[in-house]
Length: 498
Ligand code: HEC
Image 1 (cartoon, rainbow, N blue to C red):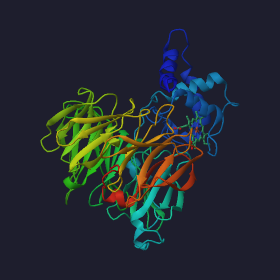
Image 2 (cartoon, rainbow, N blue to C red):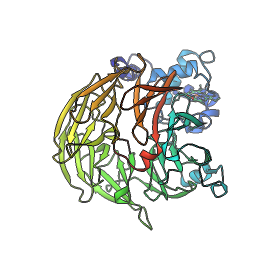
Image 3 (cartoon, helix red, strand yellow):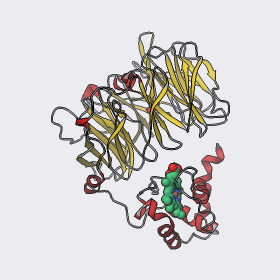
Image 4 (cartoon, protein in one colour):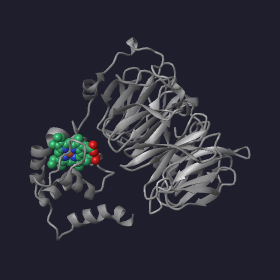
């Protein structure tokens, strides 16, 4: 893992070092236009292939970029260029793609409007489920390996429908309040609306060039998209994804900002917008006649990763200054307290449950093998649970004795820990498929079963009985990442992500 993290730095160091000549960028641009532009678009904003901007490639290591260009990607239009281009030319392209284009790419409201496509007429579709599964116990499963989505019957554990999504879905799909519609955001800004009653796509729009995630308002009328490129939030009509309003995310001091994430806060009837480059949190009311003018909450620090108290009165955010978490009152904007947490807590994946009548909040940590448990009344850390390595997700259900967490990073990434929610100790460690990353669980609506991902090209969705911990079924899938239970999501059930 060490080498993996360091590789990009070493490579950039080598390129910028005095002894290694800079690749010829003019030649790289020429090669791009000749060999890549037809799919990846003028100015690299994407087309049949994904966008290739620095923002788009931020999660990929330079070595992987070089490897994709050389060998292509199986079962996709991305061909191998190892026989067409010399290694030095491929290095040049690799370097080129990580730099911003000479002309900054833009995406206007007109671009958004022009990209809008209606694929089906909702009014003419039946408004009752056209399948025999329980509509509130469906799972939406993202297969990241080949960019597909599965709709899975949560009682029989069978796939009802499978369809291609846009490249790299991001941030978790969100549902309409009745659970009929689901909304997806892709890395490159494509928003899709899918009808779970009729198992069909309804509409699509490209709302930006690089998107963080989306949220759906409590009343189901509005979709809010948070973008990093351009830095803005985009309000769409939830019925057909037509554009309603764009709000540039600019701080009070005029500084433009990327969006870290957008959330819906149902008890407040609002959207919460976390900004990355200015010390502000925004709240957009979604009451009866919303104007989508932000209420600005000025923070004392840059806030990255978020979670909320169960009543949405307080915000828990990672803060660089507090070296851990900071609790902010959403009404007054005041800092309630700092919570010192070691490493890099992943608050957005944290979850809460009741223990001896008190709410506790537990968060995984992406740089340390540790689950931190915090008491919601006192905001004190009451337990640090050591794990086999840094983890990414933590999930539970009101009817489950355990909170399930993964060991996403390091040699033990095939392990899953089950934490006893009362004793706060690891009760079981499972290795569902030795040698393959196990991650992210989601429970059925009643909490009796859960689905776990084997995050691998030759991966699977494994169904467990949440009480006996016996495996019930295994569905082969290509890098299944997130999975989302309609009922748990629309009820904002305890233990799942929001
Ligand atoms: C015929 C269309 C096509 C052409 C031409 C093409 N690509 Fe691609 N490229 C794709 C598609 C489609 C993908 C997505 C593959 C997948 O599903 O992972 C892709 C993926 C990539 C990726 C990985 C992106 C990511 O985020 O994972 C890189 C890097 C890339 N292409 C670079 C290039 C370069 C450089 C060239 C020119 C030398 C090029 N491509 C030419 C279609 C194309």
